[in-house]
Image (cartoon, rainbow, N blue to C red; front, side, top):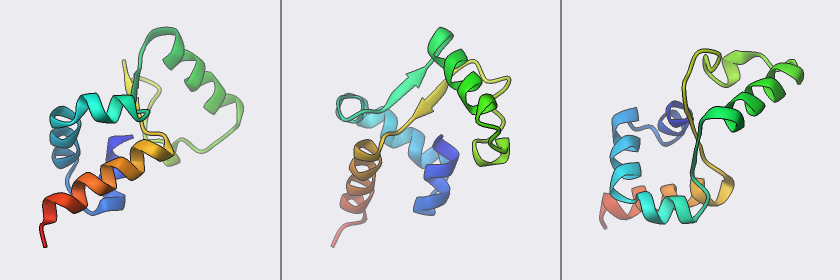
Amino acid sequence: MKDQAASFFEVTPRTIDNYLEQNSEELTRNGYEVLKGKRLKDIKLAIQGADVPEIDFGNIKMTPQLGVFDFRTFLNLAMLLRESEGP
């Protein structure tokens, strides 16, 4: 949910893409995952079954893959963004 992370950190989605690309190993090790196939289908069904307004998750009905951050990865991303700001 890259767009939500970008909104929270007040950066562009492209900035999040750049950090994901430049720090993919670290972020993946800390919990970032791209869901595809059965795992993506399972999360779509869980969201649908929970009757959660899709606006909270973006339009995931048609997406072929979904990048998700857990809390640890979200904090990791925050630290990376903060470090790049400089003193």
